[in-house]
Length: 314
Image 1 (cartoon, rainbow, N blue to C red):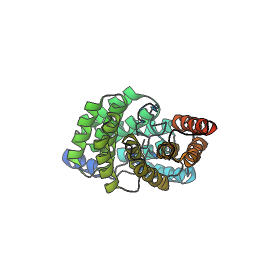
Image 2: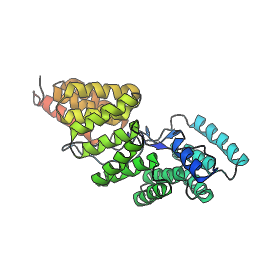
Image 3: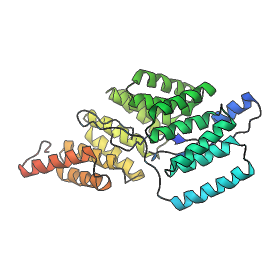
Image 4: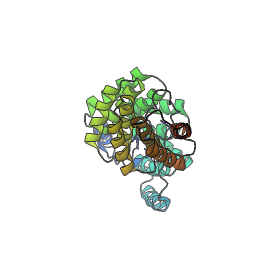
């Protein structure tokens, strides 16, 4: 899709205690995902724009809506580090908090310190890779994901993160292999299902894409990204009314997503409601004036209105 990734790809903060290699590996896989680099939708918008309306993907929409709270959280995490200066999990967690507000220099320093303390700490390698993606260092990101998986070959977040990068690099087969493995390890992972759906979407296999988005939504119905992604695949299949329902659901979760407004406009336009489509395109442009889908759509419906007709009249 447009600039914003709506994949829900997480920065990972873990609380593990190194009490032996087996226990450490198990604890690392078990820890909760604390902070999203998606909207961080780093979600993962990874929704691919289809047909001729293709647009460049990028990596993250940062959550800077409550920086005061975020700074207070970082201050608390700094106190934890003062009490536990040799704990890699504390640095990793603070690094994720920094990354969430776009403080990538500080985030990278924390991830690197965590890795210095424990070179085989997969969450820190993964988070450094996600931060590297955000600043455009894709090769460094790939190296980080590979190192995370060398440290723990069953670390699902690293498999998902690497697959998302491979997908946008056009390496769909390798991306699918990573995601199939992630789902064998964790069949309930909504993130892995969403990410695999995006690969199928890129391959124009919208039937399989919709099935994966269905499964992702069933496991976590409170994230906007899979609704937006499924809506795009439904547009490609010509199921415009269902697509509109999905874009509405996405916007109910997050109504400042320019891509969701833009694609809602496409679905409305193709279903014959040019007036409401124009409103959606305008909403998208109000959020992101460079949104190509919205700008092209708005120009199209205005041109048709001036000509006294439309391509998608009822």
